[in-house]
Image (tube, rainbow, N blue to C red; front, top):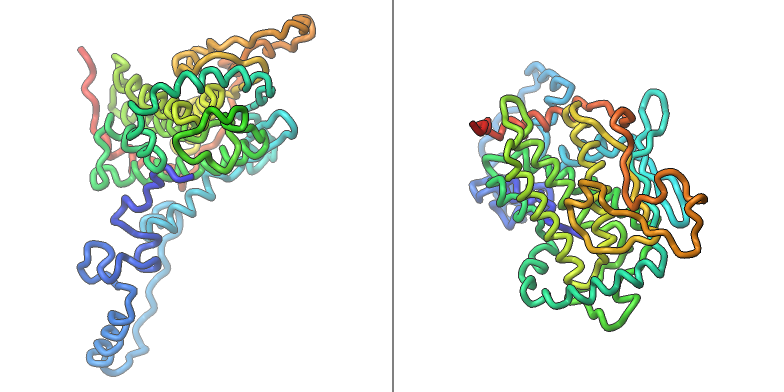
Length: 382
């Protein structure tokens, strides 16, 4: 599952620049950066023989590079990405089996695990009822065909249209969003595996999706999780940095949310997701975004969230998720007295004074500072 994984944005590296075959012989602009062809290799051999001269071994050795976060600037994009990916995933653990899964963060020093997101999958009957929403959305397939096809591999172009993302002017921002997306995919796939939810077409052969049904579980929706996670993180970079306005009229935030919502709903239109999958995806995205921002910048609060799919019904609406407006419906045979505190909510969040303690990372902060500097101050509305 690839949704514009961005590594090709930074100079067309094609899988690690010179090490991965740079488009023949030119690679980065075809201006003489070592190509991978045998012809170039032969030319370099004969060229060296002609100019190298006598060997000198008495030169003082170069000093080691200075260690620390700034050393990241020395490495190629792909290797830097791998280093930061390992750092961002550090401390993430998973707990649960059967119908539920808990994503946790384990502190490096104390070893204490703190819950980030609890997810409980809907029952088979809950998904069966959700099938009506999938059937009704079929009517939008012709209208949204081009969007759905593009979003198979690219969701960032839609979010980037709000902030005018540019590969040269926002190089660090794009690199950071690529990192966020890669790590989010790893986490969401682990949760999908644990919950093992079927796709709509498995409930009815009349759904007949307009695209290939993915070869993994449905809940949470990957497109919803990734789109909303990147939208929240991009918004933090655009509007909440030093000397910036916090989007006083909310227009930027709303446009990012609406794009992410439409991307998520398009997966239901295509016939590969239930609305409940998108709700779960956005719940996961909210906490992941808070977690990432805390690791990157040391700012903001990280709240534990719950998604309870039992007896979930209804369509997906991003404002309802933000407001935690989805209410769990009691089954006719259930006794309200037997429902645990908080169990009656389809989604919920920990109290404001009970946040997850997440330390920042010097490595991740180095990238965050570079990305934040790419966004000019926003004039405050008078």
